[in-house]
Amino acid sequence: MDQRSLLLRRRRRSNSQELGDNTDGLMDILSNVVGVMALIGSLTGIFATTSALNIQAPMQQKSSRNFVLLQAAKEGVWDLQPAVDRMVKLDRQRASEVNRCAQLLPPEQQACDRELDGWKRQEQVGPIGMTVSHANGLIARNGPPTVLAVDLKKTEGWLDQTMQRLAKEKKAVFVVLENDGFEAYRAIKNKALQYKVPIGWEPWYKQDPIYFWGNSGRNLTIQ
Image (cartoon, rainbow, N blue to C red; front, side, top):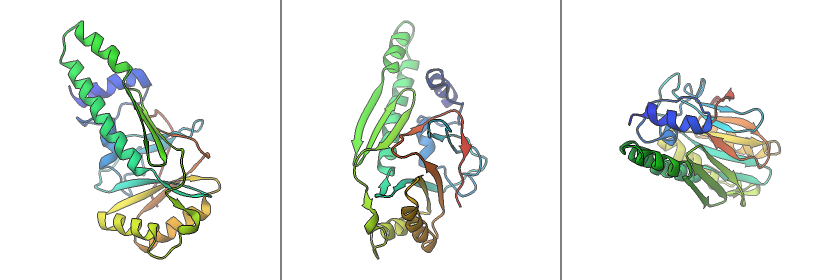
């Protein structure tokens, strides 16, 4: 089954927009897509009513620049990327089940599709709760920060090490910014500029989950 068919099958359940071509499922979009100019367009968006991060594709411009997601608040910074990476792997399992169902003949295919409608995985990845289903995926912080606010300015601390790694891997950083997290964001931005790591941000409601595979929203940009 090609990706267009696979995405349409998910769309019937979640009303999400048609995305791009890939054989491993929607979440593969996250693994190799983000660049400075690529984010200026239809890559990501925010639901105005639900604060839902909306990963969209295809982009207006291809890029090999990946990005990592962080969430900033008064308490500190949460590294969301491990949970996102785990969601990618689980969604590949879902995509495999879609392909398996597609190879069956009726009525076996119909029964397989009904089982797939109930496909769902929930896990705790560090301080981040993660849920992925046949309709969508979400992550939400539900534990202590990955790094406390008081530790963000430490020399050769977590931020320095993270930005050094991102610079070496030629990755960008994107910050989900809660309304009391500007000090944390300022620390992240200073280190990003120091190590020449592209950075972007979007305001966020405190403790709102981040949903993937939405159908509308405004564009995000990397600075």
